[in-house]
Image (cartoon, rainbow, N blue to C red; front, side, top):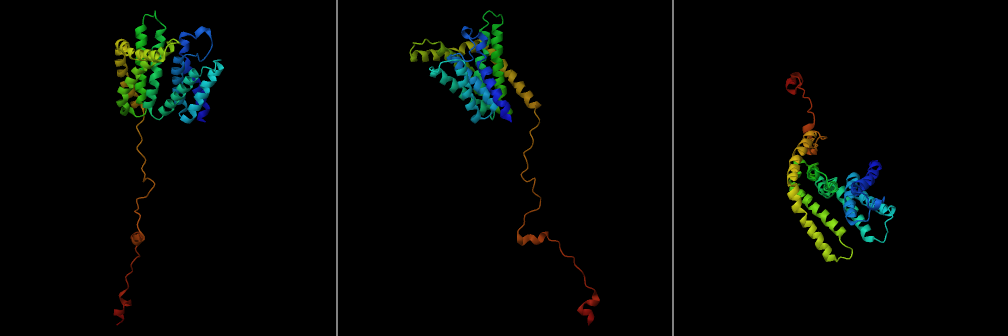
Length: 287
């Protein structure tokens, strides 16, 4: 019965969570394609949609075939040519990898937090990037960056509580690295078609490492606020949960009677009632 609602919800989540970012700037050329043939959108969108689909279905063996079928169907419905196998394979692989991480994340919230860090970083700076004349551009971008980190830290402690707080340092590092991954993928997408492979890789590496300095300089205070916000969020969540029930007693169904061998069975037998013979019936009295 669970698949009756989780599979349709996963299909919708794959579209909305993975490719709604294309509508923030508007689809290219006024077209109505769901999956524009752009490498950054196919990789990042397919991964983000796969993570959400995996979190909803919670089964790897059902998530991977579903997201692959949905990705191939979306590619066919939008009229993209099948000759562009590189972009199609990128979409399928990104969706499958995201689905695996999402399904595994339902059993370990730390894995789910690491999987959600990349989509959160991708969405954090995208809305404000379209508002170049907006007065509160720094506040909006910083707020989204901080909220993304706070949500990732909160999800990491969802199942195990404060014991998962040890993963906050590597999770924060991966969250910051996700901004570099997004910048590198977008750099590869913007590379000229006739450019050599080495030049493309060098540009992607430069974009990856150059993304950390402005991020920490502009939004370092927001990252500190995010960590301070995640602490009461986890505390309130643990306080609202009912106490953990005690582990079941393995000997609850057994009685307290010891199991004795056959040679000691006489201990549990009822001792026969003793009767004293009268004096006149004894052989001594007959004499």
